[in-house]
Image 1: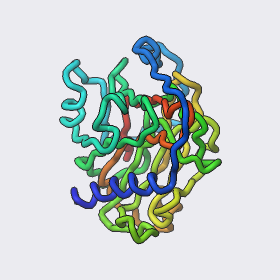
Image 2: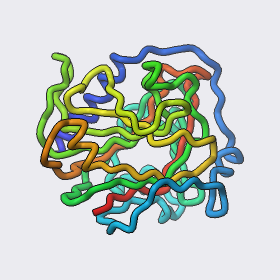
Image 3: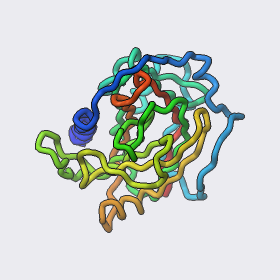
Length: 261
C-alpha cells in the first residue's frame, strides 16, 4: 500500500506538470505580521452545515510546541514532495493552532500521509481558510491551481490514469477553496478522469475561517457510480501555483480535518 499511495501522489504531480504551464509575475511574500492576523479563536468564522455524527478520525495542528515543524509533521505521518521539501519555496508555519502553507513563488508541493486508514465514514469536515488566493486560479477557466487542495484517497484498487506515461492511481477526491469557482460542483483534471474529481467547498474572503462539511460517501458513489465505498487509505495536502500570476504567491491554512461516521 505504501508504494501504491506514493505512486499515486507522484502521478498527480506529473499530471499537473503536464497540464499547466508557467506564467510571469513579481514575488510578493507576506510578512509574519500579515500571517499572524489569520482568524484566531476570536476571529471571523463562517459555519457550514454541521451534524452531530460521531468523529471516527481527527487530525489537528494544535499541539505544536515550537520545535522543528518538519520533524513535527513527520511525526504525524507526513512526507514531503516537490516544493514541500524546500522552506524557501513552500513555507510551513503554525499560527493560532493552524498549519499555514505559503507559496513564495510559482510551485507545486505536496505533503502526503499514508498512515491514515478509516474503514467506516460518511462525511469529512475541515476548518480552514485562505490568506491569499493564487492570481488567476480557477477550475472553471481551466487554470487548475489552488492555495490548498486536500486530497482524499480511497482503497487500494489502481484506476487507469488515461495517459500511457502516468501510473494508475487509487480513487481520489480533491477538496479546495476557490475565489470564484462554483461550490459543490465536481471538476475533472486533465488526466485521471475515471478515478479523480475536484470539488470547491467555498469562496471565503481572505482571513475568513470556515468549517466545510462534505458527504464523502455519497459523493464517491455518485461520482464514480459505485455501490460500495472503500476505506480512506490516505490524504495529502497539495499547493499548486505553477500557472498563477503575481509570481505564484499564495497562502492558506488548515486547523483540522475530521472524518465522521
